[in-house]
Amino acid sequence: MPVAARFVVWAEFCERFSYYGMRAVLALFFAERLGLSEAGATVGVHLFIVGCYLSPLVGAALSDGRYGRFATILSLGAVNLGGGALLALAAG
Image (cartoon, rainbow, N blue to C red; front, side, top):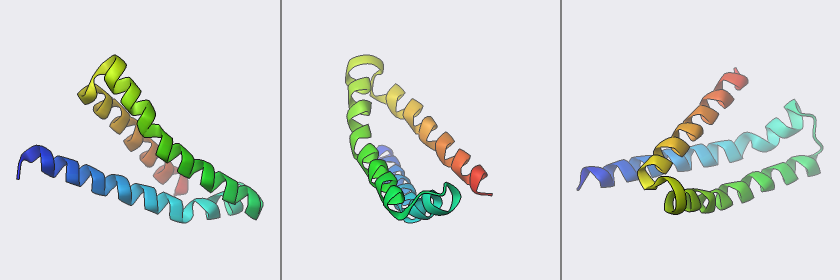
């Protein structure tokens, strides 16, 4: 198996773990920490899901039209990592 394929599989595993982990606790965060109603928390979770499914289109546009695939993957991966670290620090 090529090294690049291993990297892709590992990155996909981490991305899916982050997505489903966030989705599992996001409604509770909206309701308990932010004080939203159940309907408001549901809307927030659905907006998160829509954002997750639309963000690859933004990445594709940046990759194809501006920065190139490797720079886009590296920079947006760093943004993803920073966001996850910020959430972990805020939870503690």
